[in-house]
Length: 394
Image (cartoon, rainbow, N blue to C red; front, side):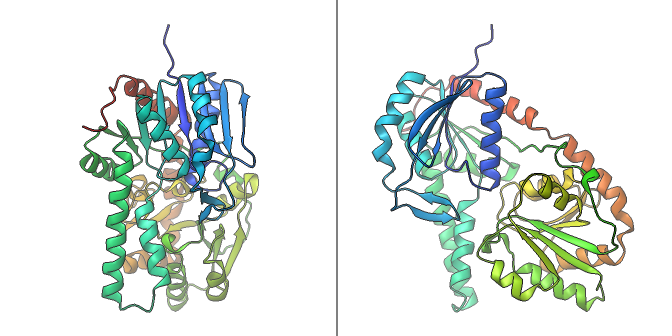
């Protein structure tokens, strides 16, 4: 009989609207559906323990002194006041492996308990937090001379990556969503690192949910409206389209964040839906003609894969993880910079003859990336991790 590893997941984000939280919720659901023994430590509105099938939950309420990070996601500097409830639950559950998900408060609990209890740990990479921090800093110091500002942000980016690796080194195995990150994390930590991609629900997201009859060219974006997503680039793109005589276009932008006010002022031909879910979100994706993702800081780009599942080709930058989802010229475009990105969108909007075949290719690519396959792979890594001997000081 095959022994299924008992996994204790320490989820820094779970309830929020972001790619990492979506991944972790689906992982928990996978364990529950398979009746695998699983413990999930996460934030909650109140501190409590409860069970749902084979999954045990420890919900930890963050205190009023918690520091905002991104919308509802916060960092609780006093998280260790919950140490006893976590310690007791771990003693009862007896995990074979601990899974941490970042550098935030709950993962810090997880890696500390794993260290002192001699439990092997796996760390999964979900967000390029070091790049996010640098981009957000750049957005609030625009008055500083450009070369100096670039040097400051590069220093913050390098320091952030160094800090992240100090934590990730404590885990015996690293999982990252693209090949570049796998190689970089392995180089910086000296730990075994493996590729773990993301999946997509191709039943929920489908071209069949398109409900449009007009002939406008709809350019879509889904994600947090934050500086690290390069949101203001959409203003440049809009101006270029107008200057090129592409007047029958509009933007469909899904998400919330600090850049919303700027978009309302500078993108008059945009429909800003805010955060939407379920069938409304599926229809929004399907109603797009081209998905644009100018971010250069994303480790994977779940929304790019979701657009492709909806039959929408994507335009992405050459920096970051989304490029690994694109076969250039077949299911989307990988661009070499701002000018190339703009030119690609303008030319596609002016002459969209290639789009029908690209839509089919995008959909086919997404159909090959199921969540089931992703989570079966992570359990292979868990099984491998069980055999790692604890030696974090090596």
